[in-house]
Amino acid sequence: MDEREIRFLEETHPDMYFTNGEAAAVIGVCPSTLRTWARGGRLDDVKSFRSKYGWRYFRAGDVFALRDDRKAAGRPPGHGFA
Image 1 (spheres, rainbow, N blue to C red):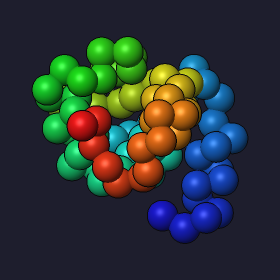
Image 2 (cartoon, rainbow, N blue to C red; image 1 turned 120 degrees about the vertical axis):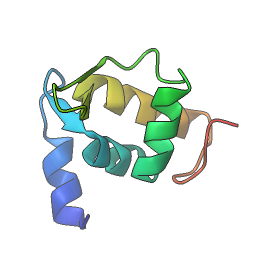
Image 3 (cartoon, rainbow, N blue to C red; image 1 turned 30 degrees about the vertical axis):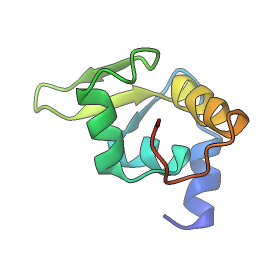
């Protein structure tokens, strides 16, 4: 994603939902990392749902909060929870 796309995501209302790729871009990790976290139960504080086709969507406000928490903890983009 380029900077323009990231700015667009930043303007998303907190009650809207991001796709896995969009949420990963906001947080600064690979989509596969976000999927791994979701499957492993590490995203319990992030409201999500799965479509009837199996696609996972994450609540934007929770994604922003996770990104901010990671920044506050000094975790640079691209690094996992550990």
